[in-house]
Image (cartoon, rainbow, N blue to C red):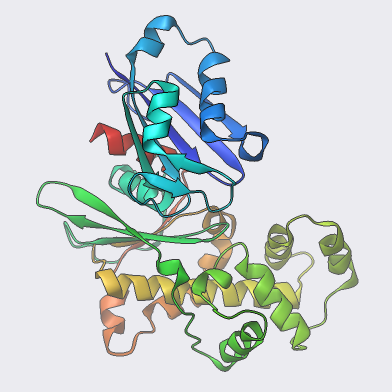
Length: 336
């Protein structure tokens, strides 16, 4: 019996799992999470995973395949990790780890591979818009996390195929006076303003800074103290925006603007791939801001596409709740 090693390689954490095809990705033989920055390479993480758990010699001999989802464009079996000082190469991994078959996938492609296997009953998904899905229609995947990832799936007659995209780096298109001011503000700080600079973990602080500096609202003293000591301001701002007991106008406006921009870009992607099969929101941010996504800002921006608004109204929209979706997708890639 062959065994598979699957991995989700992130800038913060690396999640690995040893999987038997018979049991499937949802019932791994072993799994563990590692802090990525503590290791000089992916090989070092994998070696620790395989040697510091009760892996039998027989299981190591059965390890024939490995698939890893990595943040960054995979070109000719090689990827420079976006948020890590790692260069990951399929051939080098195969030789150093003595695993005959090794595949690298963009992390969003890994998520896309898992989409056809997600189940609302588990629950893997939250339905934002029921819509009217078209059987075998194309599927869009957009994932705001540390950055903004995008991918899509098409039906080939027997199964879905996942395709990579770097659409998160396309030019930001403002759709209101506030967003025009936001674009001008960021153009004064950088040469290229993409959706990723506004629609991701790095985007929320950018929106907040603009609203604060433009005088939209006053920053409360208690919030200023929290931000001064925070290593990451994104969760501080998001949590304050969702705090009903101590509302913060500046944070609420920040999150509303973020959600609206996310909705608009999700709609852009939906039009580009004609995702009549549905739109899936992945990444770490959507599950944490679900109450904000349930408001009108996201849906209204998603549907606001002029003559094609009716088409977008019929597209299902889901939030992916399963935190292991990229790991599952990496495994399903090699099991298909």
